[in-house]
Amino acid sequence: MNKKVFAIGAAVLLATGAAQAEFKAFKVNGETVSVATQKAIYDRLVASGQPAGEQLERNVKNSLIQRTVLLQEAKKAKIENNPDVKFQIDEARKTILIQGLAQEWARKNPVSEQELRKAYDQEKAAYGDTEYQVRHILVKTEDQAKNLISRLKKGSDFGKLAQEFSEDTASKAQGGLLGWIVPATVVPSFGATFSALKAGELAQEPVRTQFGFHVVKLEAKRKAQLFPSYDQRKGFLRTAIANQKNDARFQEILKKAEIR
Image 1: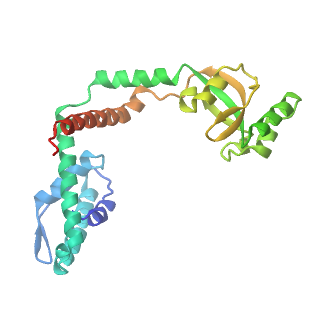
Image 2: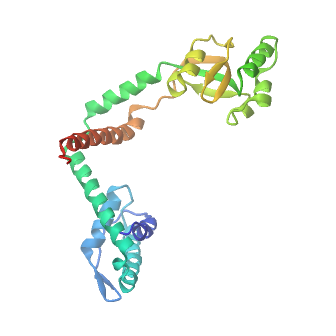
């Protein structure tokens, strides 16, 4: 399958409306495009979330016209005889068969509600019960960091120092403010430092990470509020668990393969 040709058709499949599809076969340069072909594409798009209706029907027809004309031109040019094209078609066929195998196994082994709940609870536990509002200044050397800590202890403004010296371009404009974060989402040594501080407290020593040396201050802490709800997370978790189960199954199949 030529992925670029398919993409041309898929790109125009946008729709509004909600009527029942009523297709009729039509011809493009004498070649018939069947009702079955139109309906198969239409039904798949509706199943993926496209709004059903007359507009979607027209878009399906238009995309098939484009695809048919381009395929006719490819046939005239005997593109299928090109060795590179033959190889790509064979590789695409193999990929589609493997994807079909995964989809069929997933259909027969759906992710259970219990599995989804367990995964969500594990993620929520790892996120933690507390969120922290943190400021930091990232510099290249330990001496720079220690010098900044010394200046802060003498009363210098953290935000101004961050704007002047921080290497973290994402936070320096906000005076080093990272917003509300949790230890699980940052480098372990960095998370362990700010989670051990009291609100308003400055870490007495620089924190070293792969990015450099950090001067860290905890502004405030609060009960966790930002973790998504189960309903918000469920779709992502379903896909992730299904992929994990498929990968595990394929690894079992690979282990049984006889390699000589």
